[in-house]
Length: 154
Image: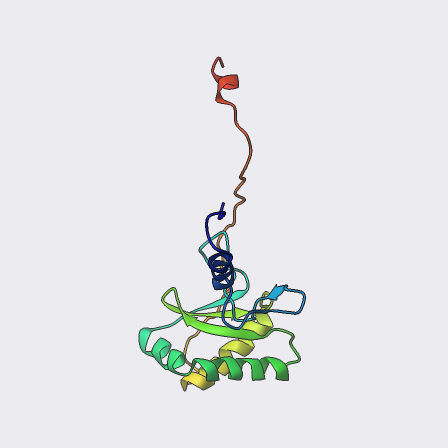
């Protein structure tokens, strides 16, 4: 496929597929960094996300303090002896989306809500309802042969 390219060009194309922090070990195996974005087959939210619908000013406050929001939510989760950790916060779907390492339970949603209100400086009476995505999933089947001529006469 690349027989006419010099080996340096092929190696450069191969290495450009990895992030800057991913480097091969002594055996040549490349381990990607933890911050590398995973490729998914669907473009919607996953069950490892917590969706929090908010008004625009509150979203802007939280996004300005995104690192603090992650640290503060994780502090609250550690205090409740939960294994769940918030990995990132991003603006999405008329609110924010928090990416986690496990599927979030109802008690953990309450902890995230309490600590996120502290970061945003919201009153305890402010309505904030974190939830898990409720979308349906489907299976996409690829590579199944279909012979049209078998079904022509039906």
